[in-house]
Amino acid sequence: MKNEKAKEDWKKELTPAQFNVCREKGTERAFTGEYYNSKEPGVYRCVCCGNDLFSSETKYDSGTGWPSFWAPLSKERVKMEVDQTFGMRRVEVLCGACDAHLGHLFEDGPAPTGQRYCINSVSLKHEKKEPDGPKSNDRCPPFPKSNL
Ligand SMILES: [Zn+2]
Image (tube, rainbow, N blue to C red):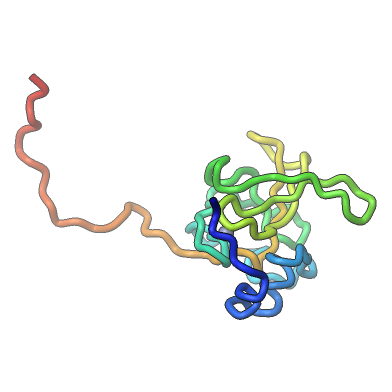
């Protein structure tokens, strides 16, 4: 079973804008979000639960005014649901861990996937990542252990 928080709990933890998008499936206004134009390397996490969702490596400038990605970090990180509100049939993108509404998926993205994950900045939290992982002073052993 998933740990499902009550709406009231989310309301306490999130800003009103975050709550509106993530828990009430709102959409931030185009060109107003924090990340639509960002090219900072790193990962984008779910603002609700910290689940790693997207990498800056798949982020591209779609010109729509929302952060756009052509792939999630992995298929399991996000989930899709058919959204029929406003008389349109769209695919909704949700956080795979906590069901936060993230945005929508369109089929007009660039190669190699041809997909466009159109995501609200407010549902994301960018985190800079060390390019080569944590620094370590551990030296490698001079000889690899034999497999025999
Ligand atoms: Zn989440």
